[in-house]
Length: 466
Ligand SMILES: *[C@@H]1O[C@H](CO)[C@@H](O)[C@H](O)[C@H]1NC(C)=O
Ligand SMILES: *[C@@H]1O[C@H](CO)[C@@H](O)[C@H](O)[C@H]1NC(C)=O
Image 1 (tube, helix red, strand yellow):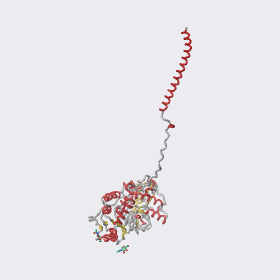
Image 2 (cartoon, helix red, strand yellow):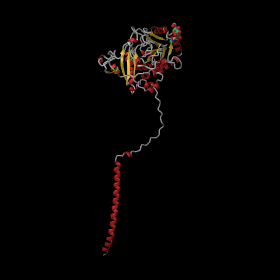
Image 3 (cartoon, rainbow, N blue to C red):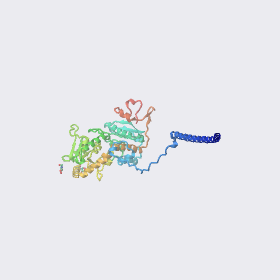
Image 4 (cartoon, rainbow, N blue to C red):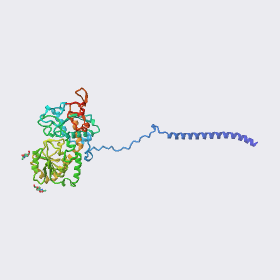
């Protein structure tokens, strides 16, 4: 009975115990399942690609001191051959190179107000006496170079091609050639662009101008492309050759002979050049000789003038492009009083602490006195040579400076132009035709005659423009 009773008791109590145990196990199982489920869920969700909202917030960088950018400075070795400097860089590097251009612009404003369409055509027969000058009618339109017309003159037309190549280089070297304004102009390729056969107020782009002629716009001469003779491959290459030559003088200028070098033909500017030869004759500082083109035994390569402490310069038929080459020598330029102005001549200084050349009379009467003084005062002479290389070779006569000059010339010319260039025109038969020929095609076909403003094969497409 006890058993039963116990059983019963036990039975009752055991039933209640088991019920409690059942609920307890169920509760534990449920809780742990839920716990595990929630963990699994959280694991799954952590594998989801992060939604945009959960991107980590960018940590602001630690504050650095604000760096003021170094102002750009022209470096001859780095930038001398950079044809594409910006306007701001041109101003910073070559502040004094534009004097000849601002002078020409100011003269137009003062004298006639502006350049009109009527000013921009090659010389018409009724406008000159004697011989026709070699001229190019040129247009820049939408950053591209066009030749509207070419008339042949006495000089080799390669001078014109060199100028056009220089213009093209200055145009195409900047990131946006279209930033150059549309312009039209005429350039004259003669040595003496102004003579008594033309009216005195004729406006042209020229290699040089007589000091008293305010009308011409002086462009960098064709020697900035290459020199016609004396073994110069190109202007930039000449500069490299001279740099190498100068390395041979370990003590620089002091190591060169204290002599004045010059070679030239007496066939041009005979009086002036003959006076130089006479003034130098018999002096122990002279290496001055006239050359005979038939003999040629005493001819000197352009770079060899740089082997002397002193280099003499003479004008030719008008200005002479040789001076820019002599200005690349670490030497003292000795120059007679000049009748002509080339594009960079406003920078020539004949006295003061920044003296960069020695000026003598046109008849060379004071040459020997000045040479002897310089030889006795080498500190002064060395200083002048140093100023010459600093100002000319290493800055204002770099190819970079010249490209700046060309682009400024385009802009300042435009600033006084009173008309808008037209890319097209109506031909005689009523058809709309393009004006001129692109430089690309002109250079490509340059051996062909272009006298009437078109090539022979284009006869049907073009007619002659005034
Ligand atoms: C050159 O000649 C001058 C006199 O004219 C003389 O004083 C000088 O010593 C000479 N120089 C040389 C290097 O011979
Ligand atoms: C040389 O030129 C100077 C300056 O122009 C002048 O004073 C002098 O008389 C001239 N000499 C001769 C010989 O012509």
